[in-house]
Length: 488
Image (cartoon, rainbow, N blue to C red; front, side, top):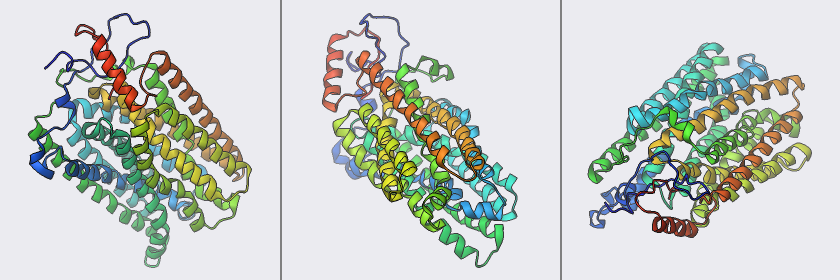
């Protein structure tokens, strides 16, 4: 291996230019970071585009069931509240209890993928937990036991968020480089398509089932049928695991040739830009997911829609993101400027909430803007983590982001329900609450831009500038300079 090949890949260099002692990060050669096999091996070669994008298909579908089942309550909010006699605060507990275990376990789940299970076994374990949680949740509905439904959502949440961490790690392992933004966009696209299909089919499915089963029993049967999507995702997980094991064997792939070991204490060595990315993960998403969770009641009370019409409007965010996320990912792969995209997305989301709160303009307009901006942010924000931390710490880093996001969602979802109940069903103050968090997200994005510019990072560079950046640093540094570079 040449001296240039052994240079690390994640930049933590300070602006001082001095060769200060830095934590050593893993090193890898180009043959470790790219799946490179001779072209004559055809489409069955792990490096061929058809093979890699077949893996991407299963990579996306492994999260479909999780996202479909996550918003089952949102699509049937009136049914839940009527059949189980729940107020808004009790209903939001179904969502917040999903997030509470992941304040810690999601971070631990990412660490376990890095250190204990490995990506393949970890993904299978987390998918099994998701399926188990959905079955318990459905059983609670079948017997009319709200406490059992809460237990099911708790278990479901343990698996679902850790599954998302493993899914992100898979994406970086197979596609790190110029395609990564598009891959993250495609993953979000399929996931949000799952949420959209949920809003389309759950109410008609319940209406059909209720012809045979009355009351909460019909609700439970409907939730069991929804769990079939998790079975499908489990099959995709098993197939993807087999493909990855085969690729590892054929390529003799070594994801950590430097021998570095992920530790929970690694989180303390992460830089300010990573912490600000985590803030955006919290502040932005708490203005989206809790809003959608309570969206049916919002559109019924504010725009006087029927529950079915409200579900259609509420699903617009996910429907648009299913289409727009890969397109934005494709564009961002070619123009770069990830931080600028995050800034624009946050501003556009603020505009969407303002339109829904202070005007009586057709709600499809505000929700369409929100869907586009949500797609833009997801396609540009999550890949930045792989530009900040080394690959052997990715599970830990993504796990931490998911953990703090779930902390925010757990708290904000409960607070959102309390605000609605205390306002007599009005959502005005709740909308202002969401806008406040978006302003925090905007401020954190400005801090990321300032820090990256001050330390001459490449988070907001174009792809061509990043190439020049890496070439310049490789030329200037000798093999004794142990300061890491930013990612590809």
